[in-house]
Amino acid sequence: DSGAVIFSGWTRQQGWPGWARMTWIFDAETGQFIGRGKVVGGYYSEDVYQGAGGELWVHLVTGGLRKLDTDYQPTGRFIDPALYGAIEFFDGALVDEGRDRLIASINVENTLRVFRLSIGEMLRSILLPDKPVQVCFEEGSRCYLLTEHRNVYLLDYEAGRFLGSVRVV
Image 1 (cartoon, helix red, strand yellow):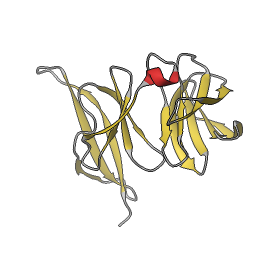
Image 2 (image 1 turned 135 degrees about the vertical axis):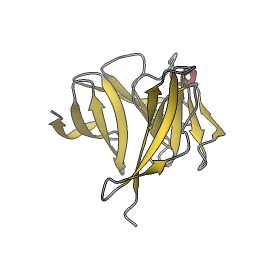
Image 3 (image 1 turned 120 degrees about the horizontal axis):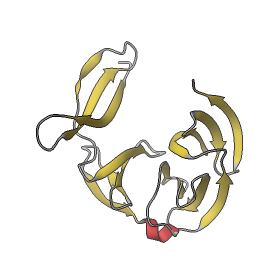
Image 4 (image 1 turned 90 degrees about the vertical axis):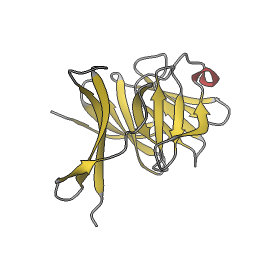
């Protein structure tokens, strides 16, 4: 079994309410459409992020992050942005529960901040060339960072160092 690639997104439709959240599953090796999956998140979520441990986190319209269980249902684990000095998390967040870290872009557009997840202490602030759009775990303390100008950076968030970059055209 080669695995699957799962896409989650919003669609527009003519009937009420005018939109729907959908999940599509494709074979990771051939790209063949397998089918539709369970809806990830809900209608009050803005985005879905994958944590460093493979778990899913929903970015709620109210600003916080809610962990989902394996059936994509909300768990009791909630990350309140106020603990980190923010009104809400903006684009891009990575939860690394194993390292007790939250990597997020909050309140300052071109800055990625690394926090101690459990107590909200800011450990470092990393200045970026442009606004982060998505943060994706790689391995160890490394992540990929996609910015609005389609630059992809490999970043060590513990050391605060850029390890590589490429521009997506």
